[in-house]
Image 1 (cartoon, rainbow, N blue to C red):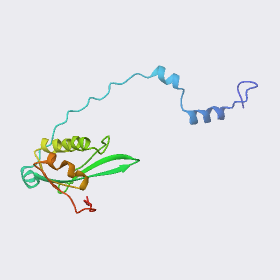
Image 2 (image 1 turned 60 degrees about the vertical axis):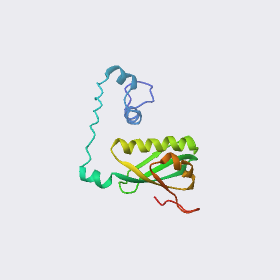
Image 3 (image 1 turned 180 degrees about the horizontal axis):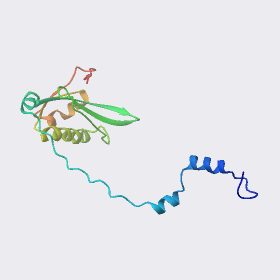
Image 4 (image 1 turned 90 degrees about the vertical axis):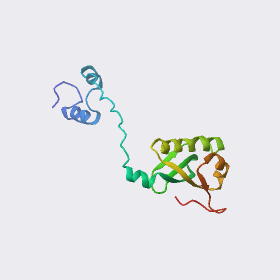
Length: 147
């Protein structure tokens, strides 16, 4: 039964509303206090074992563009390391290709690796001199780099 006369709301209506909508937001906001956020931990680079570094220090990468929802995406993957990297250049212009390749190159060089060969489609021919001392290897016309 109802405890308030002439009220159509029952106890089961109140319980159902609490399950559906949760507790009162103003009441929660008035009773909760901000907790101190956890501090961001410092990044401590992990050393690369010497024998692993010596075996993989010369890197061959594969570059290619693909599209997702009409947005160009540059994909790079190293053949033996399997390190995959993607970027979202503004376009497929030579300037954007150079800028994004330079980022990939800096990532590898920062850990002591050298990119010695670049496998890429014909459109990257425009970068051949920029890629030096890396050697650009392109498939035959109409071909494709499988990675």
